Image (tube, rainbow, N blue to C red; front, side, top):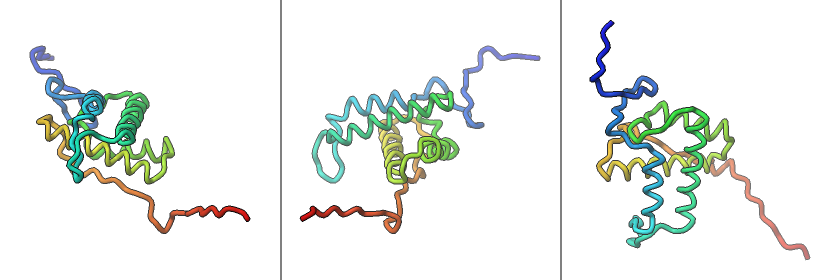
Length: 151
């Protein structure tokens, strides 16, 4: 048996080889994104700096991805978030954590935003990141509770 000790190390995630030296951890990039949120341009409004509640949702995404990594015993890299990983993350949110459809959809949308931002920054992301879809509860399934003051 011949072993090549000079071969560059690779991490295999779900049969997808990833080059270690170029890959960036998703949580590291998300932390960088959050720390630079004060200087981010807001699309559509032309303003600079994300709102407090927007930053709070990104921090929630950080916390949830960290829990996902702990549960699955694997680190997420920007270039490893493929279809299998996105579906696994969706299952984690919807079934294991029992989050609502709207919250799951919001988190998937934020995940896609982070991956797109990383790609704009010149970092390598998985090609599937453009196809990650969010979802929300059908409006016909929503229940509105209207409160009227008693007289």
